[in-house]
Structures are given as C-alpha cells and as structure tokens.
Amino acid sequence: MSQVLKIKDLHQTFEQGTVNENRVLRGINLELAAGDFVTIIGSNGAGKSTLLNSIAGTLPIKQGKIILNGNDITKLPVTRRAEKISRVFQDPKMGTAVRLTVEENLALAMKRGQKRGFRAGVKKKDRDFFKSQLAQLNLNLENRLETEIGLLSGGQRQAITLLMATLQRPDLILLDEHTAALDPKTSITVMQLTEKLINEQNLTAFMVTHNMEDAIRYGNRLIMLHQGRVALDLTEKEKKSLTVTKLMEMFQEQVGAEVKDDAMLLA
Amino acid sequence: MINTFWELFLSATSQGLLWSLMAIGVYLTFRILDLADMTAEGSFPLGGAIATMCLIKGINPILATLAAFVGGLIAGFVTGVLNTKLRIPSLLAGIITMTGLYSITSRVMQNAANVSLLGKDTIFTIAQNWGLSRNNAVILMGVIVVFIVIALLVIFFRTEIGLAMRATGDNIQMSAANGIKTQGMKILGYMISNGCIALSGALLAQNNGFADLNSGVGTIVIGLASIIIAEVLLRNLSIGARLLTLVLGAIIYRLILALVFQMNVEPSDAKLASALVLVICLALPNFHLPHNLKKGDKNVSSLKN
Image 1 (cartoon, rainbow over the protein chains, first blue to last red):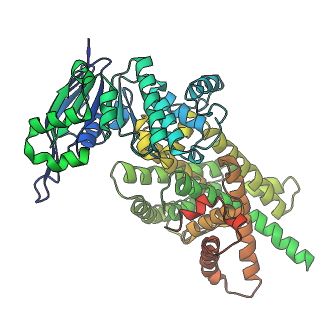
Image 2: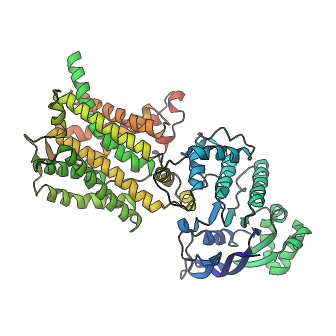
Image 3: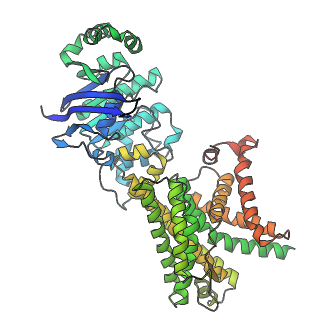
C-alpha cells in the first residue's frame, strides 16, 4: 500500500518563551497508508485539534515535517493544501457559507483547489449531479438547491459539509469532532454517512472524536494522543476485539496512574 | 404645493441615483466582505477630481468618468494590499489610504481646493443636447450608469470568482479550506467597491459643476444610511434585488434630507442631519416594532454588536 501522509517529528509549542509556554505536540511521528481510516482520541489538551490544524495548514509549523503523497507541504498555506486535503469542522456553522444557497456552496466545493474564473459559478450541468449527490443523504435536500444554507439545521449542514468535502475526491479528509455538536440521532446519521462516503471513494481519513465507541466502531486504525505524544496506535486486528473498558485499561498501562482525571474525562 | 413636492421628488431622485453608486460601493465591502472601509471618503473626491481634470482637458465625458472609476480601483487596491498583505486592520488601512489620498487628489487638482467645470461638456450635457431638461438628463444618465453597474455586479456575483468573493465575506475559514484565495478576493472587493465610489464622485462633480477636495467628508455615512434604509424597508433579498433597493434607499435618504432643508436650516447643518437620520434608521429596528416588521431581521441585527 502506498503511503499518503507522513508526519515527521512534529512539535507545536504555544506562547514559546513565556511563562505560559505550552508544548502541545511533542514529537508526533505517523504514517498513513492509502485507504487508512484513522480515528484519534485523547483527553482535552492532548493535541488532537492541534495535530489536525497542523496538517490542514491553519497552524504554521516551526519544527517537524508534513509530507503528502511524497511532497513536502510543511510550508504550504491552507489554500494550496486545499487542493489535496478537505476538512469538516466541529461546528456545523464552520463548514458552509450561510448566506449562500445549497447549490452555491456545493459549486464552491466542486472547484476546491482549482482555478476560478468568470464562468458561471453554478453550472446547469452540475445541478443534476448535485441533486443525485444530495438524494443519497436521505435528508430531502435534493429539492432545496436554492435554499440558503443558513436556513438548514445543524445536522443537514454537517451532512452537506461532508458531501462538499468529498465532491472532489481529496487525497486526505480531516474530520474534527464533526458529530460532537449534533444531537445523538443526527450524530449517528452523519457518522453512517461519513463511513459510506469514505468507503465508496476509498478515502484516507483522519477522524478526531470524543466518542470512544465511535473511535472503536469506525475506521481501521485507532490512535490515542496523550500530552502531545502518540500513546496508543492500534491496528484493525487489535481494534476488532476492543471495548471501551479494555481501551481505558490499555491507556492506563501506557501512561501510568497519573491519568485518573483524564480517564474520567474520556469516559 | 404639489409642484414643489414634485420638484423635490425629482431632484431627490436625480441626486439619489448618483449617490446610490456610493451606497453600492460601501455595500460591497460593508455587507458582502464584512469589512469597514473608510477609503470611501478619499476615493469619492478622487473620482470627482479625476473626471473634472479630464473634462477640462477636453477628454470625452464617458472616458473621463471611466478614468475616475479606474482611479477608485487603484485606491481600493492600495487599501486591499495594506489590509491583507501588510495585515493592517481594515478600518486603519482605509483611514491610511483616505489620508494619503487627500494629497493625491490635491495634486490631481493641481493644488486647487475647487475646480470649476463651467462651460465644459459633461456626461449630462450629452443628454441635454438631446433636448432633455437638466434634471431629466441627470436622471436618464444616472439610470443608465446605475443599471450598467448593477447588471455587471449581478453577473459577476454569479461567476466562480463572484461566488468565491461572497463566500470569503461569509465564512473565511471555510473559504480557505476550499482553496479560495481569500486575500485576493478581499483586494478585488476593495477595488470594485472604491471604483463604484469614485464613479459616484465623478458623476456628482459633473452634476455640481465643480470638483471639491473636501467633498469626501461624511460621504460614508450617506452610503451607510442608504444601505440601512434599504435593509429596514425590505429584508433578506437576493443580491440583485438588494442592489436595486440600495438605489431606493439612496433616493429616500435624499428625500429626507430635502425635507429637512425645507425647514430653513443652514447648508452646513446637512452633516448633522445626515448623522441624525442614520441614528434613527439604525436605532428604529431595535425598538418594539410589530412582530411582522422585526421578523427575519438578520442583516440589521448584526449591527447591534
């Protein structure tokens, strides 16, 4: 299997050189093969979001390297990385432009990472494609192409964001606790949709989650971050027999007794 | 009495049409890109100065007016670069450009504070030569220019770049994540906005018969007032419809001012009247209006913060 993403000795330190210095990432080394669907867990402050932001490019990198498909993207800005990486945020409001219609948002995502010109923003021929894509969400959105996104619910918006992230096949999709702000029922729908889209296109995915069950149920690899380091890295095989309790035990073994509080947070 | 009112109305319409380009320009940065841009008060007199000096040199009025538009584009480009590339906050970037433009406009006017257009051909005398009255000529030319500008903007905002610009103002993180060059979009927005404002300055200078170095003071308030009036009257419209209502807002604003002037006030009181009108328009939606007036009041509520 070919390698899609390689993270080499990535460090992130906030407020470096001050009393508030916070070493959020302390040397992350990871390799993702094509088709890997990795779930990432860890307590608050473990560095999950920082890791994702470093890969997406929203956080500049001072130490370490990020290599995508063999190309060093460490210094590339967000807009350039967007050619290959798509992203779904935790806040459903973040992934879409509220005052634009459903079809306008989808049209924007269709051109992710490509040159934009003076051709029609929403093309007639794309409308049928958008409709068929929306239909598979089963949220009755296929007839609401001209509805402003702001009028839709959080779940509907998150589903559309997911669709937008996969309209142009990305080399890597980043999911940042994208179901955390949804109610339990919608959360399940969006998770199932996530799995479906990832499987259909055989995407390489990084999914941060606070939900341990989701982390075990979905994906073929599970990573636990603790204090800016990879504390656990479990393969598909190891994941199969895993339960939340077992995962907690393994975690305790790895990092010792000091994490009682974290354990509470995770449970 | 009816005649006086009709005359007031006609004059407000002609003035409002020319000022509506100012409102459209301010709308582009203030609402579409969500930026406060004070460059307006510099690009407005710049537009007037460029058009006037071109006309004095005997250049075709349409070309002179277009030259003013280009001047506005450049002014907007400067603010855009200050804001995005040099990371100066938009409000400050605008103030900086506005301040610098004062000297540039003064240079354009060859260090005169006023330059008269007496006896020169303007875009309005073209229409007058077709046998129209002065006021009708202004209204006709105003309608033509405003129509062209709005049509071009509506078409632009439906293109890929236009969509990307609207997305940038709406949700900048999402735009960047979709590969939109948000800095470039902002610069382009500043440019088009100030182009429209300079165009407004060029038309008003031709209408007034002179260019005035100090004519920019308080103009952004006129633009804002027109926007707020339009938004209070009609809420949640598509972009094209909103641009059209800005014209309506500008005309109503002129009408209000004209009525104020019927009450024997000094010309210099105009700015205070403008400020008060804006206060009333901004504050009105916050009071207890009937529910059907408050509903869906998305645009104005964001101003409360």
